[in-house]
Length: 129
Image 1 (cartoon, rainbow, N blue to C red):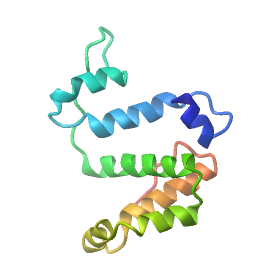
Image 2 (cartoon, rainbow, N blue to C red):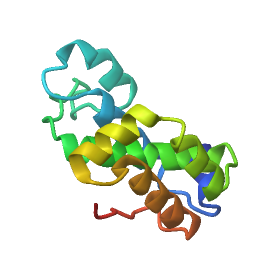
Image 3 (cartoon, rainbow, N blue to C red):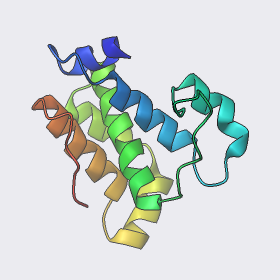
């Protein structure tokens, strides 16, 4: 994971836990006790090495975490912002649902805002929206 972070933010040494914790939180939620093995693999354990309880379900937080990870993946694959925007345009169902619920393509907008923040070296950004 440190390698992934360094590719996006050269010189950064202390963020691998952030990426791992985002992945763990996106996957290990609500009553997902059946994912305890995954939580252990991701290091989401207490001092005794037992899996910690699942994260409470928070739809907005999960959306942001997924958008952060998507923005990171776009960087890792070397896509420009314009290419990332194009890729997001290939998800018309997500776009339609976002526009019905939020009046704009919220998922794309969040991903591109995180993409911009990461491009500027701000790996701790939390975008409003």
